[in-house]
Length: 414
Image (cartoon, rainbow, N blue to C red; front, side):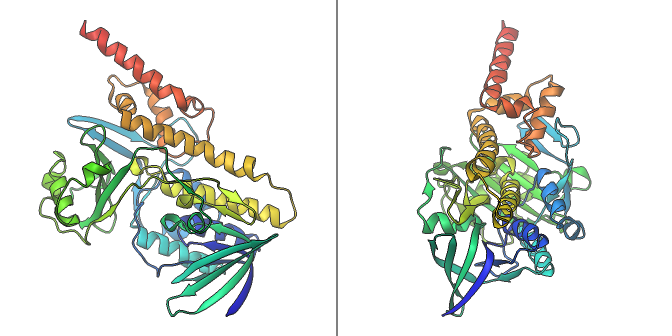
């Protein structure tokens, strides 16, 4: 069995892993990525938030993405029957980017991977981590490639960016149940032959079927569109037949989109993810740190997945670099507490979405422009900006404003 030594080993070549690797290679750290898949490969999570643009820019990955001409995302639209609520990222409380992208993740992730390889990072594709152990300050993994070849890699630090693969949580028994309700999703892509021209054809939209069930529609610049449903697991599983038959039947629930997608062929057999919310017992340990979906996955309703991946990936890389220099890192305070704050904010919004409270704020008329700006900042991913009361008071402010709306509605009926 062959053996290799690196400073930092990253598991996973998605956005979290590539941002981590780009930062480290920029700082002269010897880094290698192990990736189970062969790129390009399909993965869900096609809508980004403006906050992640800061990360791509900081590590030198922005220009390669701009060159791809991905569909620009300037906000998001929410529909509920005949009600419409549109958020414009240029009208928000926090400073920062006012646009991002809607991307086919196979092309997007492959672009990032190619760029970090150009920077000098080696990526071992089609290689799987099968074991890990720690001895003092040294971390060692065993990997096996598609030809059955085994090798060990020793590193001073492991960054787990394996996403849905959740490599270290599985191998180290770090998984724990999510506090969020059990929801599932079913989704596919279509060649959007009925796509309208202009704004209507480019805007990411969430069509609310009821408080618990919603439909997403994410157009790409290549003419394809991602569509999918999210709802309680028992609802998603109540549709009989194949996933193609189930999603075809579900589309009829969307009054707004059923005609646009009726009879349109799926580009692949629709996929289903059951009980997608995940959590972990800890985010770091001696010799390793978890990033992205290897840590927490909340819910796709606010498209926070890639932003948490790049936020945690960049912060983890910076702290690992600091420790490699011999500086002291307080991982609990500098990493866990920081990431936990962002997770807590988005968890509140996910929970209040499904209670219906957040939907009351979205669709209440006349709208409060200041409140809308503050909520827009959260939806743009700026969940660490404590000057925003909808961040600093997230655990009570949504409920409080929803209660005031209920009182106002009740008074109007008298």
